[in-house]
Image (cartoon, rainbow, N blue to C red; front, side, top):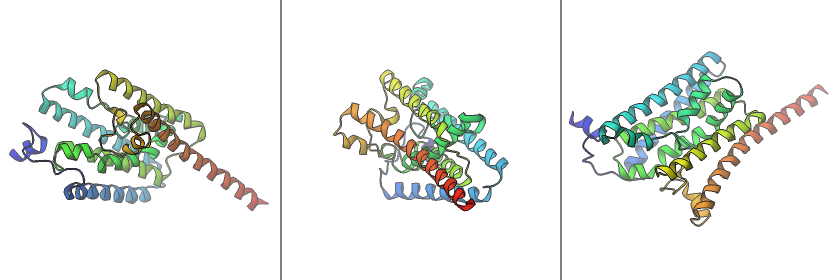
Length: 265
């Protein structure tokens, strides 16, 4: 019982956090990421041509990531004794936690929204998942590595990264240029909601107010700490990344069409 109370942080943690980039942090995240990559490649290659299993996998991960998040919020509410405060500080308004919304869209919607959602997970799931697992310096400085806060966070981030790799390996993402506007809209809506939440609560959703030791520090340092330019750089960087993926697919399709014409000739 004492072990469980310590893991969940009931009454506070008695252990001192090992800290970001400690050997415990590096070992734990390395194991989590290795398992995630292994499973995504194994299952992706095995079910690459099985449309039913591919769809079922996306449904399972969409449910799983939200189940873990609900469990975490429930335990944090019990620990903190304030459900409302817990909710407003765990809204899905980070790049990684957007997957709590976008994965269900990819799993349960149809048509262009489903296609764009699959594209979004492909583009951002792996990057956000890995950075969120390894680079969450503020978490590892605040809580022990083997704690509710870090273990559940690592699991949900790895689910995001798994989904991205699985979608890429199985070819579920279409990256049709006509869907790019929907993908960008999903991003911009979340950024706008994050900014509203930051001004209202206040908080640091999407790391728009400060980088908190995350890889977002790259943008922050590029503009010498100018907060307005920092936010613009974040949005432009993500939009550019979306554009690169769609451009790559567009150019690849053009090359394929040209090669077909040459072979027929």
